[in-house]
Image 1 (tube, rainbow, N blue to C red):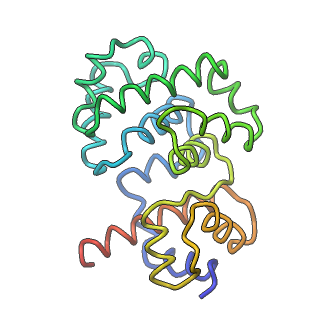
Image 2: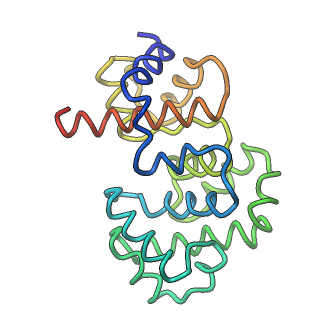
Length: 207
């Protein structure tokens, strides 16, 4: 099956299910505040159930700390307490601080970061402690609206299930999906990746 055909098939099945995180992550366009929320959630979602991420985000919102500026200014202990539901809260506190410092001080804010070339911005994100390929590409695709396809465990499972390749490395799968879609389009990449995750979660629940 061709990559583009997989997208079309999933779109028919799940097109009306832009639920949970995707109602924001696939929203177009996003405000600067919404982009910051996506970046924060991209850290919180590492090794976490989305429902627990929502609890942590609600805590941050109630405390008035759902922004890069407020996260950078917040003391470690308070931030750890607020994001505790997402798990690995000490590590994630450090990673949120590192990301906020990078966006605000390393780039001069989101608007300035939006002027940085995709490859350069990706390299700089990957240089941050605690930001791997999946997290960096989540930020690039969903916050900065760059055509960079995200590879996660659901994507790997789909590739294995459909026997799309024998090489399941991040770089190879990313190239496979981007080339298979035929055009670099961030909206297409957002929607397809979201559909893959929705499909994977449905299969995990048994339908």
